[in-house]
Image 1 (tube, helix red, strand yellow):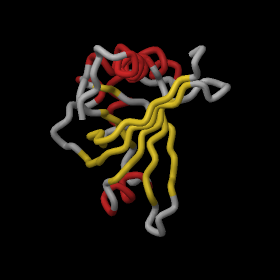
Image 2 (tube, helix red, strand yellow):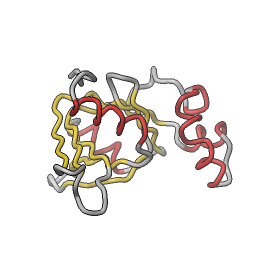
Image 3 (cartoon, rainbow, N blue to C red):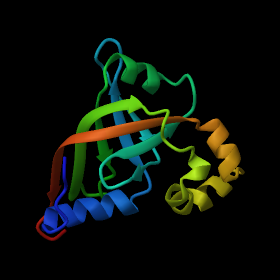
Length: 144
């Protein structure tokens, strides 16, 4: 899926993917129940990279059903909605957090706030999940 930066919608979505700090990764449990999980993420221009701790439910959910939704935070009035749907998979070829400079730049202060450094954070959040968006839904209020 290509997001066109030449359109107002595309430009707004790309800005949010670069600048937003927290998003919701929505997976489905074994019985089909949607399970939203707040995540930090990196948009590389084509895919979304999320790092997980080992043995988390979202990893089991993705292994059983790779279809996911990825929702960026809305504003307090719901005047900005951005939801991407697509497929997720564990991507062992992805760099670890501490080797992904743009991720460290984006989240370095928050990693420090947790009492960690990039290397210890990478050891804890060692499972890279790559999301390949296939569909975009986005909406803004007229004044937004």
